[in-house]
Length: 259
Ligand code: GLP
Image (cartoon, rainbow, N blue to C red):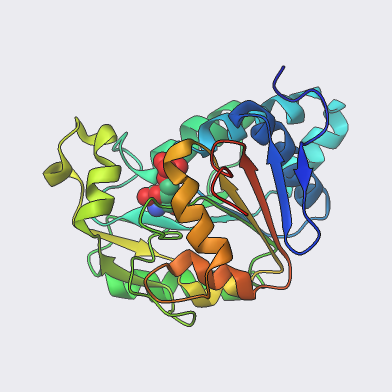
C-alpha cells in the first residue's frame, strides 16, 4: 500500500529515492516538509498536479500532531511560492494563489498572508518580481525548496533556454507549457496566461536544500535528462545538479529511464 514499506532504491551518488507510486512519494515528501517546518526554515513551495497528493499527505500529517505543536508550527509558518500567472489573482480559481489556499491555506487555517506568492494582478509584473525577490531576501532566503518538474524541463516557470543565474522575473510561457497546463483552463492552451512571474534559477539554487518531486511515466525521459546529462540551458532543471543538497524523490514510473 502507498506509504508502507521502504523506498525501493536509494543511490549513493545522487540523493535519489524511488518509491513505488505517487502515494508513497507523497508520504515521503510530506515527512520531509514536516522536518523543514520543525526546523523553522523558510519553506519554498510549488504548485502543479504532482503536489496534490503531497499536500494532502502533509495536511494529514500535521493534523496528527498534538495540537500545541501543530498550533506553534502553523503560527510560525513562513513560505514563498515559486510562481504565479500574470493576470490572475487569488480570487481566480485557476491562479496558483487559489491552488495554495485550497490545498494548504484553508485546511490548515493558516494566518492571512502566510502563503507568500507573487501578485499576478500587479500592474507591472517586472516590478512585482523585484518586490517579491526583495521580500524573500528580507526573510533570509529559502530553506527547503520543494520543486516539481515541467515536461519541457522547466523548474518553477524558468522556461528553456535558461542558465543557472537567472533572477526572479516576469517571462513569456512557452507553447509547450501552456499546453501542459491547459487542463485548468478548460483544456484550451490559448486560455492559459501568456506570461508568468517566477523565482529564478538564481534564487532556487541559493536555497539551503532542494527537494525535487517527480511522478508518472510521462516525466521519465525529462527526469533522465535533468539528472544524468550535463547541465544545459535546454533543460533548466538540470542546473539543480549543481546544488550540494539536492534530494530527488520519484516514483518507479518516473525513474524508469534512469541508469
Ligand atoms: C507548472 C509549475 C511548476 C510545476 C510544473 C509541473 O507549470 N510552474 O512549478 O512543477 O509545471 O507541473 P505538474 O506537476 O502539473 O506536472
